[in-house]
Image 1 (tube, rainbow, N blue to C red):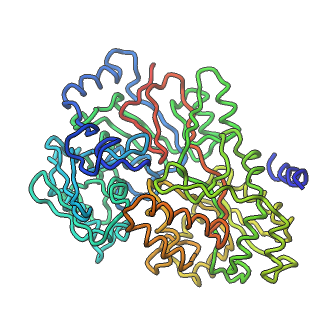
Image 2: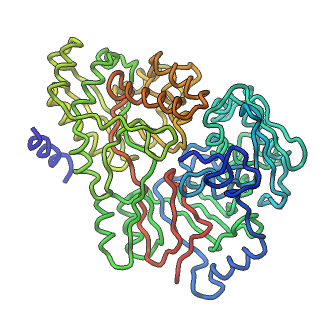
Length: 550
């Protein structure tokens, strides 16, 4: 059987939860070992000038080629990735390169005994790129916009657990919760809570973040230009309160083709190439002057089910489970992703996500798949459609392999390969009837990840709630809903993790949400002249300390 599948494939392819400002701190972020205090801005600017070509040893500009542009440079609307927003904007809290929670604009914080009231003490040396002094009143204006249910932004529902968020004075900000929130600090450290300039909120309205001119954050870089689909410019912000960037300018060039990005790094047109293919990763790693960084990410590929498909077999959990058993993930990963070192995922989240527990990789078992189909009344198999796209690394090839593997269980697949525009248009808050009428896919490729905790990762894509526009496959399981709701408010870590372990077990072995595939790596090809390269599991690069020798 394995030999037959490999031959078929040859035809298709020629947080740890840190509760203070710095790791190892208690729920009170005030003082104590582990709190973070940035050096004075002036000394950092001097260091930056020396590291940014002032001594003639380092480039003033680093060129970075990347596959996808941003949709918005508005933290409350951005859904593209977490690579850009943290460069332009800062919030009260953030994440370091190991996914630990650290203080940003807040220099300390503490909570009430019941964890329902959180008080943040702001630094007094924070400025927006426009020169405006940042205070707690700006933070309040930011949350007024984020929490406005009458005029919601993309992430308004994610923060419905907040009752109020108000400035107590210029440098004190108080958040009162409407209900307990188990992963409050992780949620509060996300880019969605980055502080906005209220003058820009008023001036640009819904157009905030749609142009370079409408971007005004407190982050380490200013937006020096944005030609959509072509390039984005990061300019060092010399008045940044923390470590000032060591390189004056970083230019992100949008190059959609993986091969073209590999050529750019190979020919010296770029210093960093984002997301190279497995084959190019192996090849480039063997070239003098180039290295390939492959670090564990917190995302995965999966083929998600349309649980309300007009194709009735897909509405049956036994059929969906049969499909999952009919897929040989080990062989797929070996064949498609061995150059990146990617392996099958063993849960519905990556090990770096708070709340993770392994439930094992779902085994490849065609006979079990056939037995489940027979139990469901489809002993002779059935026909179905799968959508895939080159938006995801080797997504098309993976879809082609699935066609051959599912055939072994008697399932006949029609594969539809779509362009990025079609793929992006499918996630617009459709009803099942609208989705089936316009697209009609029974399964579709998707990426999952980018979150630091299980609550925000899973709740928004799996919970049944009618307002959950991110539940693209219309999944609904009352037991999973109850576990999600319990995990969201349970403060005891052991009890909370048990909720997410049970969710993973149900989604893998009883009522699948999708066929979870490979745990993805963060892959970058680098000139060997690059220094201080660092990327977090959420794929956020540290551009502040990045520099490149001439």
